Image 1 (cartoon, one colour):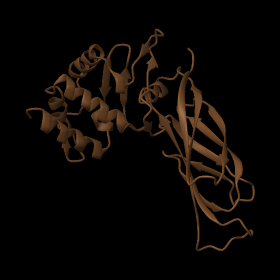
Image 2: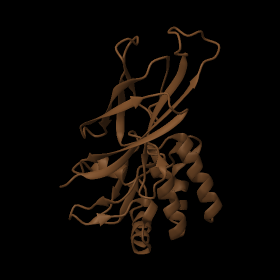
Image 3: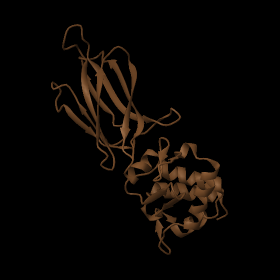
Image 4: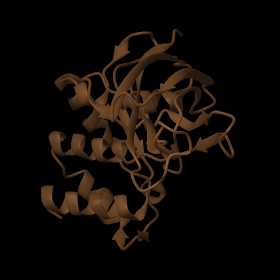
Length: 247
């Protein structure tokens, strides 16, 4: 299966630290930061959840020049007076490999953005689900399935219908985070198609590795184990269900 293309956005900000005297004459000390994000299929900036970590290889004059960040926006903040080229290594989730890009740290503007197009493998189901957050992904037959931001009416009807029929795995009387999971599961079956799509979007937007979720784009099924969801998300889902369903 061929790779997908995704656009990685590198955002750099910098400003002069007026309270710190220059180390080199004519070169004021500056505070700078770099962060990493993705662009979705509509050109909107979103968290780069397809990466497990981002590694910055700074100039060797820095203390601990190799810096690793494991949570979006993978932001590094530092101080210095000199411009330099650095390597940024992007480690793709689900053991999808590493992509290295070169970045020019310069002080011409207080903020500047550079976009890079990278290739991401599509042979890993977990990674494919993460890729769906930013745009179209292929099905196992090779056809392209829309990301959640561009689901068609036909796809929507199929998806939410299977959420209703599949139901959600719960233990009888189970309560987590103050939420009765059996009542929540029953409430989900009472939602309209549009409201169920909102549930899918909420869960996908807050997805984490600990959550047991399956998004079968081929069969139009979205299943989730409520007990694996974090307490904060369960509470949000329960408030949503109470607002949109008769529970």
